[in-house]
Image 1 (cartoon, rainbow, N blue to C red):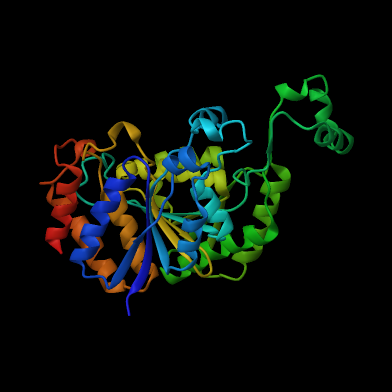
Image 2: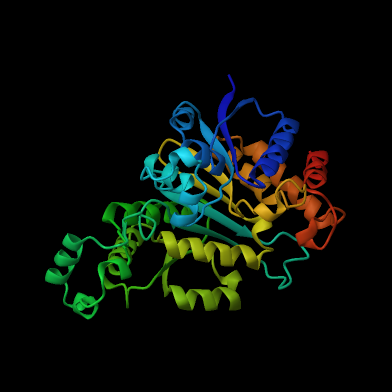
Length: 372
């Protein structure tokens, strides 16, 4: 009995890196049925929904999902690109990947950042091997925003918070509000996931990245909960730092860190910084993990200027496939694939444009497949 894996290529280079991953997974002889699903900008334009109901039903019927990349644009541009008959109907674009994370409660965004020997982009030469755990469903990505701000919302804020008085003269249509919503449950489970990973992989530290000196309520909640969780893991040390300081320390001493845990926005920023430390987004994999389901995606985005050019680096998608294989308990295939990727990087004969070479996307994938 094989696995049922949803494949959502999405937009731009997502389709090409998905093809590369499927070719390599076929070489691994993974017993799986890969089922295509519709997602992305084309379906927003034509149907007014970048995540159609049929695709949500597909996700509900599969074991996990391999995801390509998504194009997202601001509210006004999204409205303009709808087909004429859908404009003016009040349709609002919402990122399908964020929607999947929230609707399927894929609360843990796990992003490994590892410096592989031989990578010409790892110019520091550091022995970096850290993992970012990013809370995936709340924080500034909750989607609770206002513009213009409704009068009743302003009234409640002005009545309950004295600091709103400095905005009292600003017209409703000249002020925008994005909320940072964090719950104790979400804070607890992402921190616990980070500590459980650290314990299982014998990593001595977990670093909480927050800003409680300014974001006193949300940052304070996350910090208090992290300390409570840490008390149950005496073999793992909790470090705490502010987001601004962490950016500095990662650039200076990235090899000091093992596991990093953060809320949604801070984790998004930090994981891209960490990716660049080990070679850039061409090597940046991620897993979106819940209690019963997981979605795996490279973090490089749809890169529309490179779409259909057979040019971008597929290793981020192949490293993402490593995470997927590990999650479905195909440990040996996961190990073999990561080893093949590491060998190709170290050998240096195949290098895509971002690595200073001329190897095409598909030839890079073929080089990895040949190592299998």
